[in-house]
Every structure is written in structure tokens, then in C-alpha cells.
Length: 510
Image (cartoon, rainbow, N blue to C red; front, top):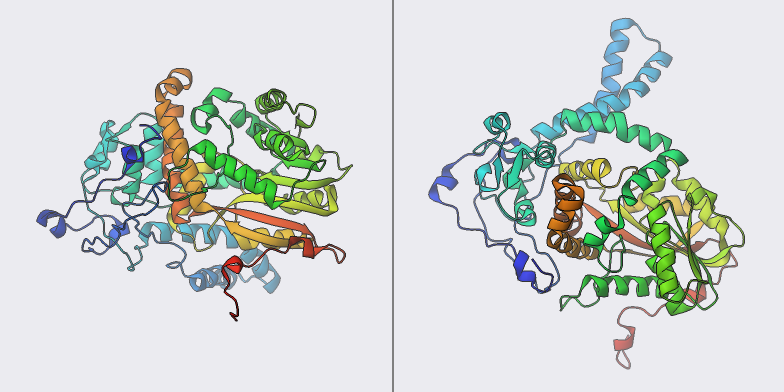
């Protein structure tokens, strides 16, 4: 596969169903009613850079989950206990508070197994047997999942990583049709991970925990990350500049760095802080192209060494430097004119997020600008979103629990004393970015398998293939947020931009 030929991973046209397939009834609760096949989804995508969907099927989720029933259970179960054991009102309220989370979790678990998909679908499933998509090598697993019995997604990827399953083709093509062979319930394994690992990590987020997670992840080896990130070594969403052509990953990452620098108005001599700078490419880029005095902060030892070497090679070693430290230890004076944070704030955690923003505000000059690029989840969730999110927390980004809907992030910024100037959702750009990473990863398969083994290759293969789709369909996305201190004296006129279409206005128009 090469990035020069997008057709190499183009998705095949879905065949017309046979008479036998039309008569077969699905056995999974995901398809409780037969649906006739339609080609409504077979749209032509005008952009050669996008990875188009083959089967954009909707999963059950928040729209099918009754919040009123949940509230009734949270109030009703403790009330039944009150009647049985003669609790006082105070004891009842305490018991209700203690049982609220378990009742909510159990309700989601049960609902995830029995929910039917929304009826407003633009396509139906081909209803192919699971053997069309994969070969199950383990005899016990094969006896359980065969024919039209669908496999829970977490069972699939765990056994795929263990080598008990092989895919019958390209992972992206197979995942585009995942609803034909997988279901997305909350299994016991998922619930156990959520309760015993995810929640404790969310509540703790100590310096030691964050350091261990970051270094275990990012110090795995620069060659591991170069195998998919490419020359720029940037592990954040790029930006598509021209959707009418197929831009390279490097062109799109340059688009993003230029966009960030222009968005915050970087000027020669500006003190610039990049929190969670990764391999420091933005730090070196801003110093080289905008004349800033840039400092990058990361916990990764390999990243620090790589970034400082790159800055020296680019001739900006004196004005672009990386420091290996926890964000909580950043010196707060002198203050910075521009602070950027690209997809690191998720790792701060929900519990520490407000504290982090208050620190950023204290480090920012009164007339400075703060650029926050942060991954987030949609509020109108589907069960696939949970499955993907917990997979990512377990295997790819442990501790990144502050990926939340946009309204939560905006509320946190405003509470911390920021005024949000602009927001933009760039999930489709992220889908394209991950698509380029996926192509690079496949191209370097032999090198990765030799150096890190088949399991690590497969984990990243599934992460990248699935995330192309997740970002494209809005399950997870990414937000660009520009903010400044909400002070009376702030010169907001300096941020005025022309309205869309202003340069196209005609004389005498209203």
C-alpha cells in the first residue's frame, strides 16, 4: 500500500443481497428486525483525500436509553430497601447516593446487551457470516462465534491481539463493515477494567502516575512512532488545506502548524510555551518561521532529546528548547505571550482540569492568547463510542480521561477566567490524518513486527483503522479553541476578523 494511490485502500462496492440473505433473520440483538438493503449510503465523495464510509450504520445509545427510568431506579431501589429495613430519611438519602453509580452502571450494562439499533438507517447490513471477515483459529472461540453469531468487539480485539483470530483482508475495509460481524455491549471484562483501573486513574492522577504512563507510552522507541507519524513526528491532528487533492501527511501537518501560529498571532520575540510538546516540532517551527522564543514541556525523555536535536539542526537551538518535566512544575514567571497545548490536556484528567487551566491563566500575559487543541467525545453517545473509548484508555492513551464533550471544556475555560474567542471542530481532518498514519503503519509492518512483535503491530493496526472511522463519524472529534483572559481591559478589537463572504459583497447590498 502506498500513500500515492488512494485507490489502494478504496472500499469495495457492496454487492446486492442474495435471495438467501434476504430471507435470513439476524441472530444478534443489534439487528432485532430485518432491514431491506439499500444503496442510499453509496454516495460519491468528491474529495480524494477523505476515507469514505462503506456502511454508515447507526448504533443504539443515548437516544434509546431512558434517563427517566434510570432516575426512577436510583430513587426506587433505595426506597424499597427503606421499606424493607425501616431506614430513616437521612439513611435513605445516604444509601441512594451510594447506590446511584452502581445502579447507573448496571443499567447501562444491561441496556447495551438488549438495545436495538435506531430504525432511521440509510443502509442495511449485508448479513454475511462472520467467516467472511475473519478466520477464528481457537476451537472454543470458533464454536461460540460462527455463521451469523456476532462477536462482542472487546472479545474480538483481545483475541486478535493474542493471535487467536486472523483477519481476511485489510483491517480498515473489515472495520468499515464491523456492524455485520460485531456487537458493542458492555462485557464483564470491560466493566472490570472501568471499575478497577479507569476510575482509580481518573480519581488519582498523581505526578508519579502520569510520569509512568507517559514514559511507558512515549519512550517505547522513536522508531515505533516514526513508523506511522512520518518525518514531522507530530502526534496530533493535521489540517487538510485543499480537499480537492490528496495532500501528503507532511503537507497537512505544515498546514496545522502554520494555522496555530497564525491563529495566536505569533510575533518575533514572543515568549511561547507549548505544554505537552511531544517531539517538539511546533516549538522548532514557530521559532524558525515566526522568530519566537519557544519552550516545550514533555515528560518523555526520548522526545526531549529528539526535539532539542531537531531545533539545533534547524538552526534555532538558542530560541527553541524542550524541557523534560511535569506540567505542574513549569516556572510561572516570566509570563508567556502565547501558550499552546495540543492534545495534552486530556491527560491532565477531569479532576485536575480546572487546576490546570488556572495555572495556564497565571502563566499567561494579560494580553496573551491561549490555544487549546483537545480531543473530545460527542454528548449523544452510542455504545460503540464506549467500546472504542475504553479500548483507547487500555491500550493507546492511558490516563486521558478528560476527553469530554465541547460544552464541558468551554464551561471549564470560562470558570477558570477565560473568554473563548473561537472554536472549531476538526474531526474530519483527524480522520484523514489517522488515515495517513494507517498507510504508513502498514507500509512499515515488517520493520515493526521484527522490532516489537506481531502483538504491538496488531494493536496499532486496530487503533488506527478503527479511529479513521470514529473520527469521521463524530464518535470522537477534536476541537481547536482560542481563548484569552476575561479581563475588562483586554483589547478585543485586536481579534476582529472579517465575516465570511465579506470580500465577496457587492456594492449596494444590504
